[in-house]
Image (cartoon, rainbow, N blue to C red):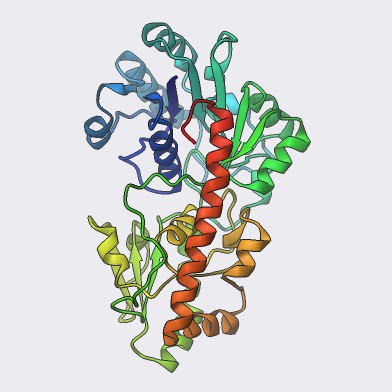
Length: 394
């Protein structure tokens, strides 16, 4: 099957959970399909050179005169309205308002030129690209997240970047846009159930896909530096809020017991956190496997947000013990949450971390549990993706 992925982010040239999601779907589908990528950003922009190198001539772009038109249109829009730092309270938009103007026509031309048999669009905001496609084309929307009444799910003091500051939909509008697809991919079980109850047909839950060629199995030997905690993530507002809380409330309790305990920050989160003697800012690394050998556990202190924490699932796949707040496990089921450490209480969270770091056998057992949880998540996701794209390999 020849599949076209229409996405507002490049799979390799962007950071954060949204790019990780696109990358996972791209790599999973191309095992058995001929996969093309159309980069159609919400703002004007060209594909990253890294994506051009990896994807090659199968990377298409909303470029040329369309790119220039969108660039000037966005510049002019700033003269008439102000981009607000969060969703406008009680103001709803139509999902198609963020869709590039010429996207539907461009998708039609790509289908005719390259013989595309299935179109997968990322986010409901690009679903207009599915309008008018013939019944022979398989149409799929990957939701990433739900956007109805979004302003009620985000604390009022939280700054949200564009375009998510505008992403506040009526449920009826979001469901109507999602019903343009033959199949809707939900990123977690709770959202999948909500979409099914609201009237979406053929909802499949695809949380995460195991696409790495080399993935850490459950550890059989202790890590080199068990007193090092890790946080992997972007500078997204919920991550920054949670890490600052952890450094302020939990890390001092841990260091009262053992002064060797420290926190390492990986990803763009390192740019948003002030340096302290107990916090090491690493940022991006070339060899993640080597860095993981120096981590005793990963912490994910997240208190709000929607969708699903992909960094938590990735940590499970790396065979890392996970200690997190309750909200970090959203959408993964009570069974997985109960088998790992989840607590919002400062003392309980610090006690759980100390048990891991000070007890080698406990740490190795939790590594095996983490890997088992990861395999369960990925197995369910592979089955759901095979139903969405029937020729995918079992």
